[in-house]
Image (tube, rainbow, N blue to C red; front, side, top):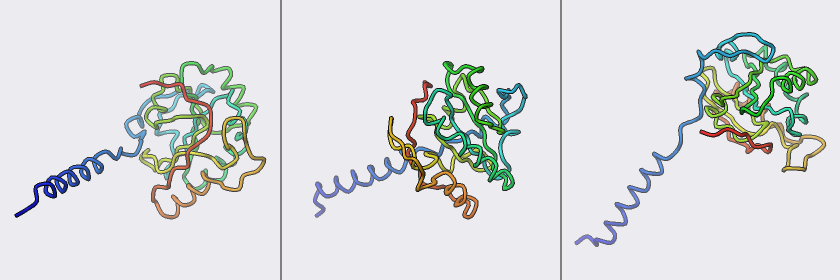
Length: 199
């Protein structure tokens, strides 16, 4: 005769396994926004798809006043230049209605950014990407599904603390690994300034 306690335990285990399997959130994606219209901070009208790369896209959350964003300006430009010829574009976004266009323009000009950037004042892209901080990197595949999210490198340690030089280049490594394998890469949690977007 079957012990009812064991039977109940097995049923609970099966239900728990099913619940856990169903609770894994799907990867973030900007695919539903691919045909949405945007105006870059320089005034160029483009769809999101126009800005995205043929192989992948690196979306960067930016804030002109965030010290960590200021820390990474050269790195962002280097990433954009390094991978442009490999079908990976960089797109910057300034999330939240507190961001000012003039500040974004000054920041972009001073940094020498040549990749497209948009004011995400309604947080459409930020929420689709599930952005938490600035700067945070989101590598997507050609369709807009996130295959890596997180830190640029290991220079940002915590609020108020950073390393002089990077030992780990998380974003570049993730892009290289994705281009080689086509597979998603493990998240490295980004340190930065809080994104002020609410669902």
